Length: 237
Image 1 (cartoon, one colour):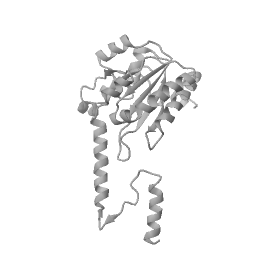
Image 2 (cartoon, one colour):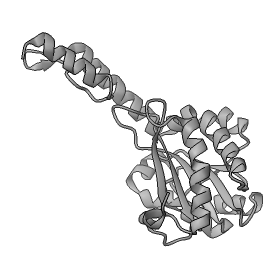
Image 3 (cartoon, rainbow, N blue to C red):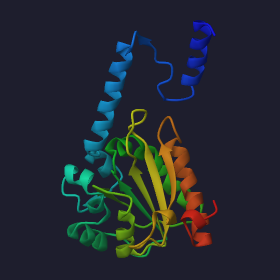
Image 4 (cartoon, helix red, strand yellow):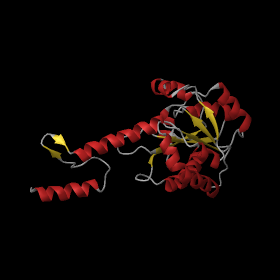
């Protein structure tokens, strides 16, 4: 196969994937522009992990903030278990400020990408709230969790006892996407729930599942979850 034909094939493949396909080289080394792009993407990923969600964005959606037991970012990365449990102050704030036993509890969390919240929340949260209303569902008091892991939804369930909970959380960033978000859903979350008992919509970002589309879809998934009274591997979407 001649080089022109190879270049055309690589171009078509690259148009359908963010993967580094056919990047080329000079001798045994990658092209300078590709090395620089790799370093830039890596920097975006690091910024996503160590960044903070915009306070102005949280204020815009009237989301109050609670912390897990993560203490600081370094401990958060080394001790995932600390991100699954709320701090004493956070537990008290939730108990005081939130509606107990709501039909749907909406929670926003930084997870491993604060950038994912900044990039997607303005579109996904309004779409989600509209979708809940369209599906005849009522929401509790939404809030934001800092230093969160997915398992924190069980600790929240212990306090508020919601019928269902959806956690909008930043995904682990990669070199292709640093702003990807996931929506984890659980029917009656409580301490001891297994990961297999959660339902998830992942890769929510501009080049994946559009946040508006994801928000609209989450509402219908939650409605079916409540009808079937289950989530995870036993749940049929």
